Image (cartoon, rainbow, N blue to C red; front, side, top):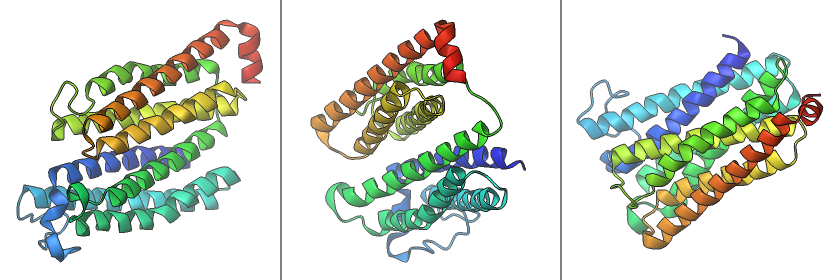
Amino acid sequence: MDFRRLLLVTTVVTAITAVIGVITAATGAGLTCEARWPLCDGAVFGLFPANLMSFIEWFHRLVAMITGFLILGSAIAAWRGGSRLRVRLATLGALLLTPLQVVFGAFTVLVHEFVFGYSILVLTLHFGLAALILSLLIAATVWAYSEVTSVSVHEIQKAETVALVAFPLLIALTPRLLFTFGEIAQLIYYSLGFAIFSAIAVAALWGRELGLRAIPLAGSVAALLVIAQLIVARQALGDMGQLLILGASLTAFGLTLASVWHVRGLASDPIASSLASD
């Protein structure tokens, strides 16, 4: 497989793994292990699960294992293929963080007697590491493709528009706002959240490649706010948590809207557009 395609596949699978991890925690599937982690009920990657919860836990492990090998393969390919230093360092960073992510994944199963059923600190670190690994892979993918293809303000506009269109549904799915925050709602919510985060991150990285200061700044803040609200949504923080989530969502939406408007102005100005493309 081509190195850039491998990076892209790795990034997408990493995002999918993070969403599956959220659903695994939401259903309480990890708790089927109890004190028998890592063997749990002895099933082998869900082939012979004792029950549905066991299947979810082992399926998550299987996908996570595949993701780990993809990250390893991407890092090896980056260092052996002569990619630029920033691509190599990004893939190496993702690779080095992966074992730590596995450790915190184990803690989410083993440590479940703390506040709200899980340790808030462990859950936050586990989710934060997943977001950081995904961020490094997104950056590596964008940088790798930028070595062979040029980008314009029109591509930035398209990426930000994707995020902008998805924001209203994400806001509507805010925990306990309009819908019960069950497993299906969480699946859609976190899938949208990671998609929006990825689109904003790609736009910010492209903006940085073109030397557009406003786009990376707005995108970085918006992306961090999206991740922050996804973290808060995993905690049972009541009305205050809901307000924090809504505030982060609306602020990120506003920043993205302002960025789209700014990019639209650049795209309609032939001189500014040509300068950005040079």
